[in-house]
Each structure stands twice: as C-alpha cells, then as structure tokens.
Image 1 (cartoon, one colour):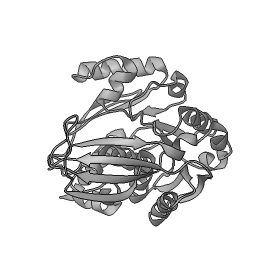
Image 2 (cartoon, rainbow, N blue to C red):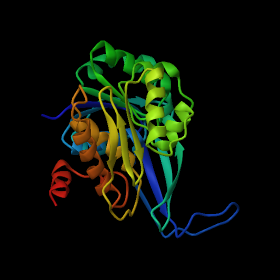
Image 3 (tube, rainbow, N blue to C red):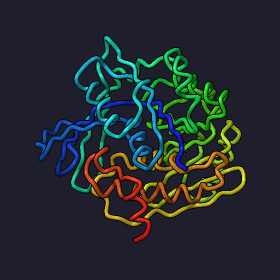
Image 4 (cartoon, rainbow, N blue to C red):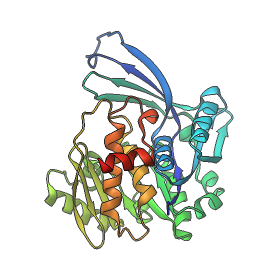
Length: 306
C-alpha cells in the first residue's frame, strides 16, 4: 500500500557546470562540461516519491516559457499529476546553476523566478488536491505564506504535513504549529532551534525545542553519517549506507520523497521508512545529476537485498 503524496514546491531548470575545483574570488576557470536537467527541491522530491511508488501530485508555478513546459513534461514523464501547476504570464520559470567539483561537492545559485510568485490564495484554491493526499510536503524554495496556507488546509483534512526547511531561512513560526514532521539537516536544525548539532544529546535537545515550537516529530539528516529521528514514542539514530559519492545533488530530496512514499500516518514504521529513504539517497549520490540519478522502487529494493 503506497501513499498518496502531494508536493508543494519549486520547479527549476538546473544547469550543472563541472569544474576541477571551486573558483576563488576574482578567478576565472573553464568548465569541463555543461548539462541542463529538470530540478528544484520540490520537483526532485516529487520525482523521488513517484519513483519510490507513491501516487504523486504537484502544486507549484512555472513561467509561460520553454523551461516551464519542459518542467511540466518532466514530471508527467514520471506519472506525476501536474494539473495543479499554475503558469505565471509574466515571471519566468525558476533556474539553478550548480558548480560541481571533482570531489563531488557542489555550490548552487538559485533564481526563484515564478516559484516566488505562488500565493496563499492560489494554494487554497487547490484544496481538493491537498485533501485527497495522505501526505503533503513543502520546502523553502516557494513563499512561506503559500506553505502556511497549504499546511493549514491539510490539517483540516487530516493530511500529514512534512516540512523540509531548506534552504535554511528565517521562518514564520506559525508554520511549525501545523507541521507533523520536520526534516532539516544539521545546519538547518541549528538555524531553527539555536542549538548546534554535535552529538546525540544535542539532537535530543533539538527535538525538545521543536516540540516546544509545535512539531512533535523530527528527523535530522547528518550527511554521510545517517539520520536522527524523534517521535512522540521513540528516538534514535540510523546510520547511513557507505557508498562512494559522485554527486550529492538531490540526496536530501531523494531521502524525503522516498520517506514519504513509505511512512505510515502514525509514524509507527519510522525506522523502516528511514532505512528505505537512506538506501534511496545512497543510490542517488552514486549517479550524476539530480533527477536522472533518483532511483525507482525496484532499484531501492534490489540494493536493500544485496
């Protein structure tokens, strides 16, 4: 039984520039390669959920341009329902420029474009899309007012809300009060709670702080080390799978999408869902590019059985 997942989020065309190393201020380097692909945190998470077996739909905004049509088509190719994607007549589709070095590390510049034009009213108008989901996911590449509106609607229909507070930003505290599960990395968690993540005790302290802020369930992803989780009933740390990373782009997005495809509404299977999500992101980092390297359910299962 797979979940119905709706993603509210960003749609960006990613341009990746491969470089030997990151440039210094004032320095000009030549790139070894340039590729373009569908991306954006929201789109990546939706594709990860869909490929992991979830019945997935998307709420977002694109420009009236080739990039926007390309983004919608990319999601359709993964059987994602795009009927709730709005076309902005004025502002162009979002884009991101990714510098990727030989060690597999990346630096990313994002132009929000039409993603930043998504309004609370437009989201509320898509109440039916939200109501039929089991899980609604949002990130911080679309306006927080839209997220707050969507999560508020979701809670009226008993839909589980998952917030990925990335990229790290000042946050409207009202959003956390309608969030069931928050999934930051260690930097984003520290940004929101003011408590630096260094060990399990500091993670427990983060979980306690999030509970005070209104969120009962927390997962902190700690890169190649693994993920910490805390629910109302249990907490612990699930180590990551050891693999050679080629490109870490979309690893976190794959994690969240894959997690949402498996998670039960009472979080009783959080460890299993987490392990599945870690396996999925361990496959993503072994391939180049964001979307092309996001694995399918069969690939995740096959890797789990090795």
